[in-house]
Structures are given as structure tokens and as C-alpha cells.
Length: 203
Image 1 (cartoon, rainbow, N blue to C red):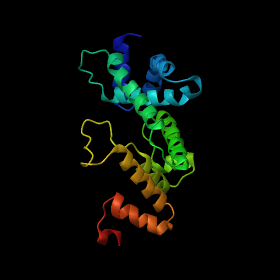
Image 2 (image 1 turned 90 degrees about the horizontal axis):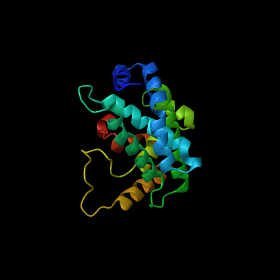
Image 3 (image 1 turned 120 degrees about the vertical axis):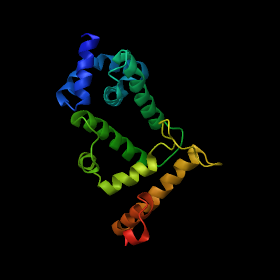
Image 4 (image 1 turned 45 degrees about the vertical axis):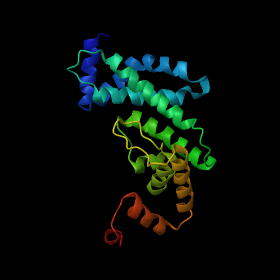
């Protein structure tokens, strides 16, 4: 397929055409798989492939069609970036609760698959139905286990004197403490502190 045909597919992807997403994935899956083979042993390739496809679709959504660059050249850093972020998070040297880590990995696996199936990020309800968690539980798991420093260019620095390890451990301790509360108490804490509602709004 020519570069112009790829650009046509990317144009349709940016317009929300689901069939175009499927066709683009089918066409460029060998490119994704090439990085999977280089980065992961055989038993980890399925998950890493799903993550790479997310990177490919992110690239398609953000590609400037007026650019003279080839789409595949533009897509490679997105594919590699998603894969490296996933592996960096999965194999973090920080020791955390095994139960929480397994819950996060389960959510991430279902999130990747649903994103590829739906062509968009799944809602908390959709993710919960697949993973067997309530939306509230998902929120707490993600708050506790998400990477401390996001990879975006506008990421805020950590406060002076903080470290990634201590920030992550604090989040995990918070999650494990909140998870022991009654449902109403967990909901109040979520509204008051995670969503920054006022006391009047929470009441």
C-alpha cells in the first residue's frame, strides 16, 4: 500500500471511521509486531502487541495530514513510547502490594483490549464489567498505582524533597487504607479529595 493510501486511511480514522481503524491496524500490525519481538519474550508478546496498537492509533489521531513526513516514521515513536511506558510501569523496581499490582495489571490488560475493540478509551463502567470491579474500586486502584511522573511534556515536577518511590508508596498506602472503609466513607473521600469538591458540595 502506498503512502497516499495510508494517509487516506489516517484521514478516515481522524473522522471516527471504525472500519478505517481496523484496516490501518491490519495493514501496519507487522510494524508493531517487529517492536514486540525485539522487546518481549514470547509469553509477554500478546499484551505488548495490544499496547503497541494503542500507540499506533494515538499516532493516527494526532498525525498532521499537512506534514510531508511519512506516517510510519511518525508512528514509530508513539508505538515505542507506549510499549516502553507499559514495561517501565510493569517492571517498576518499587516494591508494592502484590494484590494491588495484579489488580492494576488486570485493568491495564482489559483497557488495552477494550480500546482496540471500541476504537476509544472505555468508560469506567465498561472496564468494570470486563475486570469485575466497581467504578469506585477502579478509581482507587488507578489513583494508587498510576506512574508518579506522567510522560507528557506538561507534566508537573514533584515537590522539592520528594521521590518517585515515596510518592508511589504513599499512594499505595492511601489505597489500602481507603479500601478498608465503608462504601459511603470511600465515596465521601473520593468526592472531597480526589475530585476536589467543597464540603458543601460533598454534603
